[in-house]
Image 1 (tube, rainbow, N blue to C red):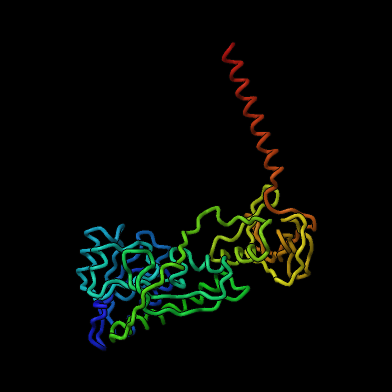
Image 2 (cartoon, rainbow, N blue to C red):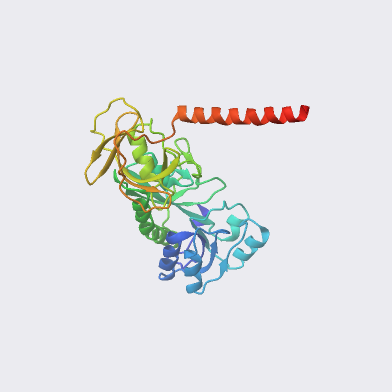
Length: 339
C-alpha cells in the first residue's frame, strides 16, 4: 500500500479527531511519545468536554466544524500539515478531499470486531447479542463505513454477567495501547494492512429512545443480555408496573434454571437478599436492581403475583374507552351544529 511509504522511526504529525474518554487518554499517550499531535478536532456536539479539555490543557489547536467535509474545515485541517488523521469515536464520515488532508490518510479506531459489528453503539450490540468477546480494531478509512483495511485488531473478553459499564471501561483502558501500537507500526513502516472479508460483515444502527423496553415473552437469555447491554452508563432497560415506568438496572439468568410455561412478566418467586424471580417466555429472570421515577435504585420488593409489562387486554380496554369518549364528543358537536 503506497500510503505506508514511510521512513523507519519517523515522527509523525497527527491530527486527532474524536470524542470522550478514550480519545482524551489516547491524546495524552500520544503527546508523551515520539510523535507530534498538531491539532484536535472534536464533534460539533460532543458527548462531553473530556477531549476538548485535554486539548486545551496541552495547548493544542482545537477545531469544531459542523461538517468535517466542508471546504473551510478541510482547509483548516490541511493547514496543520498532518501526516496522519486519527479518528477515535468521531461521529462524522470523512469523504474526499477530507481523507486527503493528511499525507498518509486517515486511521479509525473502532470498538468492534471488524468485519462484524460495523456501525454504531457496537459495544451495546455485542453484549445484547451475547458475544463472549469484543474486538477493538484500527483500520484505514476508505469511502465505506468501517470497511477499510485492518491494521491492528485485539480481542477483549465479555463475561456472562458483565454490563455495558464493565465492557466500556475495559475498552477505554485498552484503546490507548491499540493507538500507540498502530501509530508506531505506521511510523516504522511495519504496518501490514489486510483487507476485510466483506461477505460476513454486519452493520448496526445507533440505538434510540424506545429500544429499551422489555418484552417479557422473550427468552430469559435475551432479556438478561438486553438489560446488561444497556445498563449504566446507558439508559437502562424499561418495563411497566401498572401505568408506572420502571427502570431495571441489573438482572441475572442461569441457563440451568428450569424451563416451563407460565405468565410472562409475573413475579413468581423471591430470593432473600438477591431479588425477585420474574417469569419470562421460557424460564425466569432474577431482577436485582430497579428504579422508580424520582426514587433511588433499590432491590425490588413487589409481592409474588405482581405483573410487569404492558397488558394487551388493559391496553385494548383503555383504547376502547378513549374511542368511546371521542365518539361522544363528536356526537355532541354534531348535535350542537344541527341546533
